[in-house]
Length: 170
Ligand code: ZN
Image 1 (tube, protein in one colour):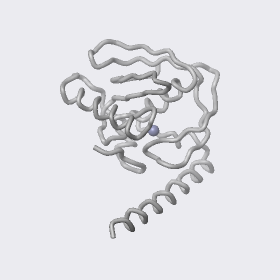
Image 2 (tube, rainbow, N blue to C red):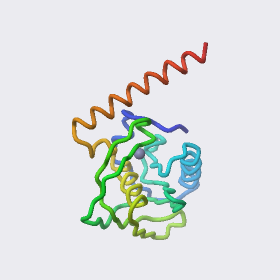
Image 3 (cartoon, rainbow, N blue to C red):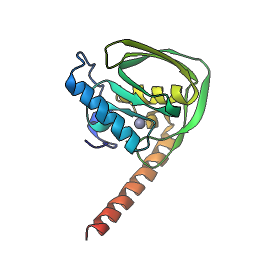
Image 4 (cartoon, rainbow, N blue to C red):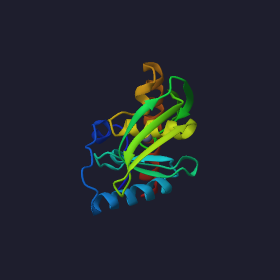
């Protein structure tokens, strides 16, 4: 399992809801958690590991959660703009406007309902990850001009890392 990057098609698809929490789902949760920590990320959604299912893992400020079928049920009118990046668009960052507070509903691995009311960084990460399972990326929140800047930087970094890995394989 690897982190898939833009413009992989799975990142652009609405993920499937999870009906049964079976061993496969538990294993997916373990792998996603491991990958999030390894990548030093603070959140990861199943489409980012190539799996079109509604699961996210988050760990901003040690507020760790695995959520199945998460949805945002409330958002504050107050918004906040902060720099954001994404493991699936590695490299660039750009300011994204999001609700300052949200309430997210989902279920945990035991099938119990979870309701998280969060603000600040955690609210931002939850919105970013719930976007992922709807096929949305943070760059979709940017103006056309900002998005093309971010994508230009991303492609440049991608080229450079490709050249580097080609070089080291000689
Ligand atoms: Zn992301």
